[in-house]
Structures are given as C-alpha cells and as structure tokens.
Image (cartoon, rainbow, N blue to C red; front, side, top):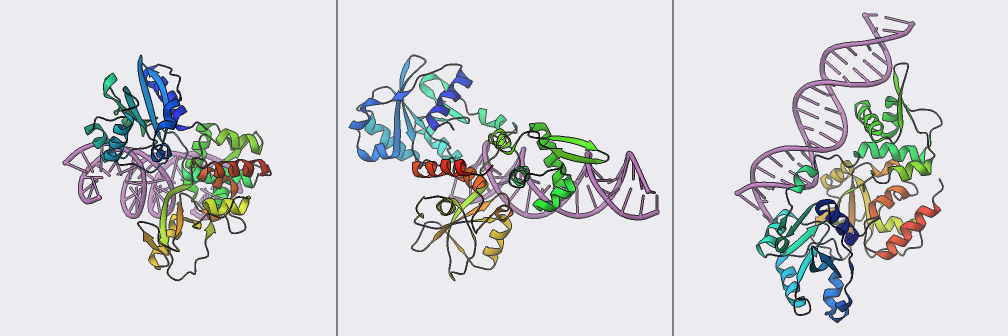
Length: 327
DNA sequence: CTTCTAACCTGGACTCACGG
DNA sequence: CCGTGAGTCCAGGTTAGAAG
C-alpha cells in the first residue's frame, strides 16, 4: 500500500512525466509541535524548483484559512514553494484554496501549482468514467467464494440465493468477474457457470486492487435505550479478532437497510459530534451479516474497511489478522 | 454550506432461446 | 404449450461531484 507521499510521486510522474525524489525535511524538528502533529513534511525538486511538501496526517479536512495560517508560520523557515498535500478536498474548500493561492495536490485527482503554471483539475472529469473498482454485489460474491470455496461451478441463480441478490444482479456480477479476469465464466448447457482456477489466497491477492472498503459512511450516534445487538465493526471488531485493545467508542456495522430500520424505530440518534456514551456506526455497501461470525464482521471485509487508516497499531493488527487467516 | 445534476446500483417487467 | 435461465430496458432510490 502506497502512502500519500508515494502516491504524490506517482501522480506527478503519470501526469507531468517527471520523477522526483522526495525526502523527509530535516528542519521539521524546529517547527512547533502542533504543526508536526498535523502534517508530515518532505522536500523535493520539482521542475528545478525546490518545493516543500506539507502532507496532512489526518483525513479530516483542515479549512483553507487555517492551512494558510500554518503556511505563513513555515515561510520563515522555507522561502520557496510550499505544496499542501491531502487525500481528498471537497469542492468548496478547493475553491477557497485557490482563492488563497495555496498550491495543493490531491494525488490521482487534482493539482493546483500556480508557480509552475499547472492547474490540472479537469482531470477529475474523466475520472468517474474510468471504471476502477467492482460493484458491491461483485465484491460480496468474491468474498462469498473466498469463505465458502465451492467445489463445483456456481450459476447465477444459485449464487443469487446464497448472497441475497436477484438473478439479474448476478448476471452483471458474472459480467464483471469475466471482464476483470478474476474468474472464468463458461456456458454449460444453457447456464452460465463460474469457475476459479487459482486457489483462495491467489484469488484474494488478485482481487485486492479491485476490492474496496465495505464502509459507505461512518456516523456518530447515541443510543437512547441501549438495546442494540449489532455486529461489531471497525476497531471494535479488530480487537475482537486480535490483541488490539478495545477502542474508546464501540463501532458497529450495519447494512443500508438495517440503518434505515434503526432510524425509523428511533433506536439511534445521529450526532454531529461525539458525546459521552455515544458510539460509531458503519453503514456498509453490502450486508455485513453475510459473512459475519461470532458477532463481529468477517476478517477480510474488516481488513478492507481499515486498510487505509493511518494508525500504526491498527495496521499491525490488520497484518497479523491476515497472517493468521486460514486460507 | 446548499442546490443541482450526472452517474451508479439494484430490482422489476418483459422478451428471447431452449428443451421437454 | 410450459418452465427455466439469461439478457434488455427502464425506473426508483442514492450518491458523489460540480455549481452557485
């Protein structure tokens, strides 16, 4: 898995055809602590311009005005270009960053480098057109196959029952599996039959690039009646599967359908910010119950849901989780 | 931040092809 | 005829991104 700075290098190479060597910025330790807490700093040469890359450590967005203030504090120590690097920036913040003349890069997405005369935001447009990942239903099927390695081929209608989708959806799932090359679909008599030639572990490794996090959205909730019996998700599930300590707030995983029911029955109340006793709920793109065991979400989905985290403790627990996995 | 819009995902109705 | 399985087309509900 590439970290953000590496993605930055790759992105520049793909779009500008330049390779840059970025290094940790030595003078970083002279900065105030709160800045080092918020960002990692790197130095590089970009088209003969020395640049300082300021990488946001957290996924949380920092408002452009604040970023500008931070940059001003650094300018005493670095008199050249400063580039703000973040995994994602919302459209309105992007606009404000440009108003503030702050150079920024969102790897794989957009870059605004006025000093170098680069404004690559039309790049976003085509992005949605390129089909990058597989649909949730296909992911559910792949996971089903990984957990219940089938001895014989599977047909769309049979799989539809097993993963709770309609046969129509399975038609499309088969198409996706075929075009991505994850498996083989053959006509036997009048039926489409799905086969996998590789073993489980290779299928997992082959799929990894195409699989996405099952989490559509994370919400903070309070639970008035304290009567929830939901699947553990996120760090709560990870601590169930590993040695990791329980997180401060429990995390649960639900399907979109279940989430609606919870809201309708007023069993949970969504919060803007956490309050004492509140918890976190992950709303999933497919039903976590499909593969859950012992009251927690399944390890592979769990891995996918947390692999982009910055937390080293979590990363390590995830790695051992996969190592321990019985293929 | 709010509103608008294009894209996405899924399932239903329907059709077609096939074998009995 | 019928039943089965697959594909096409369409609509409803969502979502992410763009625009205001």
